[in-house]
Length: 218
Length: 223
Image (cartoon, rainbow over all chains, first blue to last red):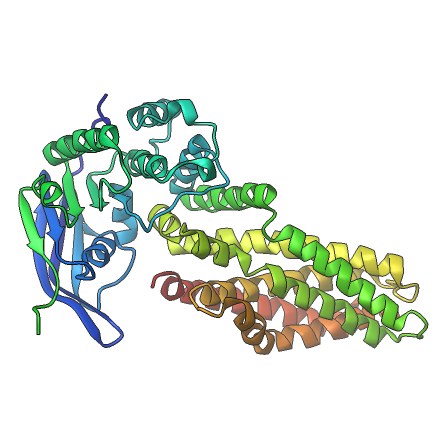
């Protein structure tokens, strides 16, 4: 089963000399690239080099210290709040609500997002894709870390995002889980923008372009 | 339209989450019962003036609110769901959703404290129900408005528990002084027009606090 077709928006993400400091420590600097649909980019680097930080900056979750990110939707430059509805994000730092069931999580978050694509059929398709349909009425708090990771994929794909950002995409997943991630990645590369932040060479190899982040060794 | 739908969806999520986890409600109600019981044991034989009763009434509401209202953001931060919420909603949607939830919670809390006071303190007789009703309503909304933005600030701090009342107290002083005065008027049985000045302060406080919080929230919400 495929994750579903994308809405036909033309999107571009452009990073202009992006730099990030934490306190006085510079994490990375001078990151520049442009991604249009369809394309894929791997963000690689050592532990602590700023892969997750750059992913969050691209998703508009945190700001950069210097430089900027511009987003265009159908050739019109838009702010991150408007563009956010075109982004799907999977990350170890992002959690869903333990006190709700898998299906309730998707329903509630879809209502908060208030997009037009929130039908039950899509939720069923996605929960089946990640092999959680049978467990849809179980509380997420009872899920294993691998099952939670699968549910994050269902959440990330729920609104048919044009841009999919995956931070450590196969973390906690078993072989079957890695297979469905590869299927999602293949489809996203062909139809949308895929950004993968990883240490793993094989995962980096899924993408056509690679950018290495981090400061040079002193 | 989407703004209202999203904001309401946040309120619904928080209400359902609260009903399942009882994250704040149990703590608030237990605090109300224990603090009112302590005051009752200490002052049961004393003749209390309306000013003292009014002060004790708002002291209970202040400390109870401080023990529970911060959960609205602290729980999101502790469970790692802040990023999820940032992804699906704009900062203004999150702020107004949380503000509505905290306002509802504070109104429930104020009503519970009122009922308890009327039942356990014979001297707590509301002689001007209109003044009392307006004071509790506007005071609760003002409380919720200040508590919501401070909760958003302290959720990002390491010392969440102690920082909340410390930061809140100076911001809430004008509100506390006004509601205490107005509640004393209600217990004294004064005319509604006598409390109009206090109501103007309460409405102004609510508007200034809500507008200021709305403008600030964007910076507080994103790291």
